[in-house]
Image (cartoon, rainbow, N blue to C red; front, top):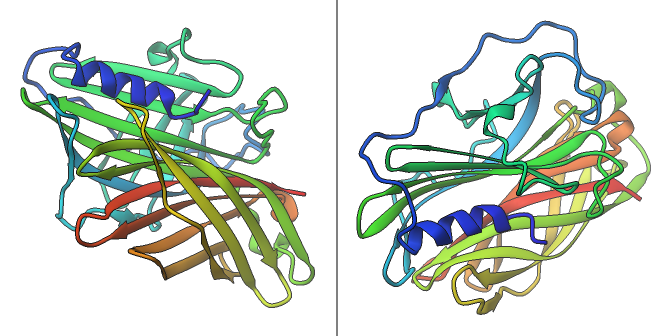
Length: 312
């Protein structure tokens, strides 16, 4: 089961005319006060309020309800929101708030919005409708029960807001990765590591919206503070099932030891410019989590997604 299939299913329902009516926009909650200093040691046993460092990438686009054709808004909002991005956990409600960049508000979801029928060992799904707007929130479940990849300190997710404008949908879509970041003092300064990884994402062009899957690899050379990665994304059209192959994105990047983060920006593969950024999570960089984006001119389209992994 593709992780992103729940959100795709919700978009398909709206494209088929099954969405709700009304005219009010969806509600978001003010960002809560910072949590107390007590922290959770992992994501598998959350006991107290916490603030998790995150990376995210955002797409704004419209989708024609008749044809499914999509148009990315050229308003400069696409790409990374690495600074001031975080995921807050509320222990009392077992809820999550996602802050994207400098936004003054954050989409928040708790157990009351959890869709038990669509949730399983791999993912937890949340949904709500307010007037013409449907919001979906999906989290990849950490822990040994996850058959896709058993993570302990890292997770990722997708948030999507879809507003019905009659003939089309206005969509705001974000992918994010978060977790218990590796302390700078605990980040290895020597040796190397490879990680067992997975990717998930979304691609938009004039033909429509595609769910991304595919293969990936990630390695870190702590001696030289360098990374290398490979992403081979494949897109599946959410309406007709047709596929797109983008080739192999494979390149170097750097590690910032002061923040236990990594990044690679501006690499060119065919018509696409590709970027990747994220953090090391857990003790001694046990896991990684980040986001990638790629886009091209002349109607090539725009893709985004998350990459997570654990040390081999």
